[in-house]
Image (cartoon, rainbow, N blue to C red; front, side):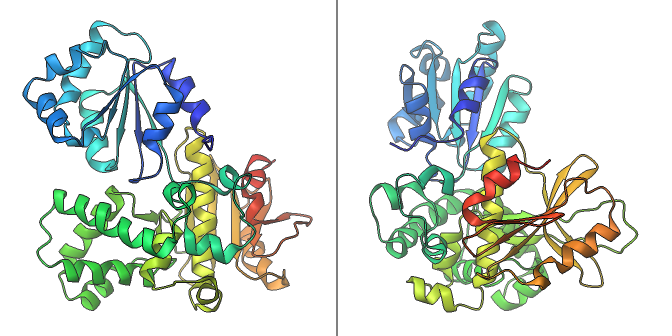
Length: 389
């Protein structure tokens, strides 16, 4: 059993808050994490129809049977319970009474903030990180990591990633989205998903997507919001530091799991990944998510942004720390070239609050130490972030 890096934060918060809420993509390991972290708690799956009907029809009776030490899985299936949980924790404000999970972040978060404000800690669990699996599986091939992604089932059961990700798309993503909104033409939505994958690592252009899919701008905006809510796509927001340059105000489009993006692009083996024109953007997606997983596993929020000005100057990732920032460039090339440092050095001149220098993550296997820029491999991302100083 692979120990998840988020477990210490989860256990610590359960000693401070009466409720801990864990959100994340379907099949990211939320259930396994909760069961392993709290083996003495009762476990309730609200996906089960009879259980859900009981919870909705008689919430007080339903909750009374668990003595307040319970894991409620997929709370978005019975959000009515949250009001009754509020009553319980207000009456008995003991820590660690309820562990709640949900797979739809906007819906869950909306209900949580309305009913459990100040009563719950919130964690986000994404699929495996490289550091979590490297002692159990071969992670030496970047192309294989890009192709397979990081959903636990693919590793735990040695599944073919192409088959598994196709099943995941149909079983979870399409089903969940149909529960939220009436998608009349599923083939158009599938086309939209593939076009999103084709724009991975690019500035989000809703009008262009709408034109290519053949639906309205409003529909595309709604669909993007749904993909965000279901932890399918991640929009890296623009950074608005105090600089004089005119900055691009649109986010960049990425996927929470790079393997799902690879599947949507039609990639089926490592050779196809290595030759694909989007290999560089897929690699950036991999690196971005590794940094985001590190933040989430520490119980922290994202502090990641994209920098791009009207002249085309760009930094792949801005790691913000108050006024100070740590610019990170990401290059898929296996050999460090001088041009890899060009954008970071330009950024140093534009924005002075970079006391820790900058970082470069590249596709090679050997780290380097430069005067003001740390060069690291994809297997050293967490070490790079931990040692920003």
